[in-house]
Amino acid sequence: MNDEAATQLSLKVLKEFLGENQVLELKRADMGGEDFAYIAQRVPSNFIYIGIAKDSDHLISHHHCNFNFDNKNISVISEALIRCALEATKQP
Image 1: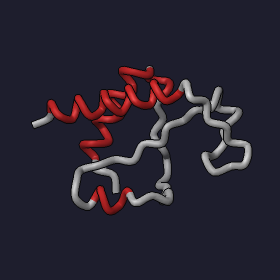
Image 2: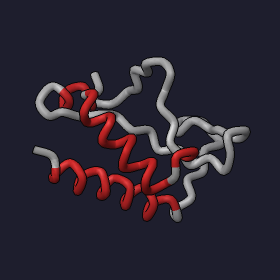
Image 3: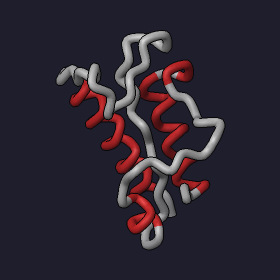
């Protein structure tokens, strides 16, 4: 389960960094396939999907055979997560 406060913090930070129209909140729950649940039991957490599609008409799942990660996304993803972590350290 996502922690509500962690989710709101991430949404705020990511919208400021990436732009309001670049951050979407899922409308329905998604189970994923990660060990995230074990971490979230101990630390307030939220799961973030990082989209790398060029546009919303060309979405490809990370496990699809046509998935092709562009390494230029690493710096954007890294900075986004660092910004979230830094903002979280400011919280009481």
